[in-house]
Image (cartoon, rainbow, N blue to C red):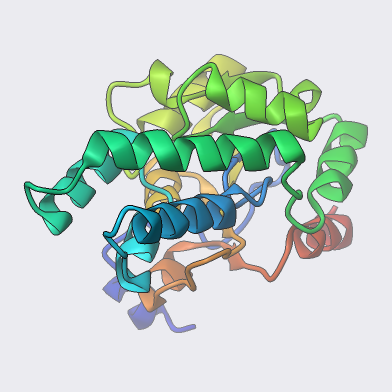
Length: 235
C-alpha cells in the first residue's frame, strides 16, 4: 500500500495498532453476534409476507445503520403507501423470536474476548442498538460481563457513522482514543471509529470493505480468531 494511495482516501487512517493497546471497543451486531443476518432475514420475510418484497440492495444498504435512519430509508424508498408500522411490528417479532431461540456468535468472539480479559485490556461496546435491547441481547449471548462500558444508541445524540459513540466509549473508559482499537463489521461503523481517531480492525460480515475503507483501517481480517492470533503474534 503506497503512501499516495493512503493519502487518496477521504477517511482518516491509522495504519498501526497502538502499543500498548489500552482498550478494545467492539461493535455488537454483525461483529460479535450474528444478528445482522437475522435482521436481514426478518426484513426479507416480512416484506414478502405483507406484499412489499425488498431487494438485496435495499436490505444491504441498511446494515450497520441505526433504527431511525433505517425507518427513514424504508419510507423514502418504498413510498407513502408502505405500511411502516406494520412492517416493523412483524419483523421485530420475527427477530426477537430468533434472539430468544439463540443467535450464534461470530466466529472467534469468545476466543478473542477471553484473550483480552486475560491480558487485562479494558473492553467496551459501542452499538447502534438502543437500550435496553443491546444489554438484553448481550446477556442472552452470554457476553455482557466482558464489558466495562456499554454505549448504546440511547446514549448519544449522533449515532454511527458519526464518531460520538466511539469517543464516548473511550471517555467512559478513561482512555485516549489513540490508545484504543475499534473492531467493526459495517461501513458505517468503520467510518465512526476511524473518525474518532482509533486504529480500526474491520471483520466484514454481510458487506465487503470498499477500497476507501481498506485504506482507512489498520487491518481487514477474515474473523475475530485472526485478530486474536494477530494480537498474540504482536504482543
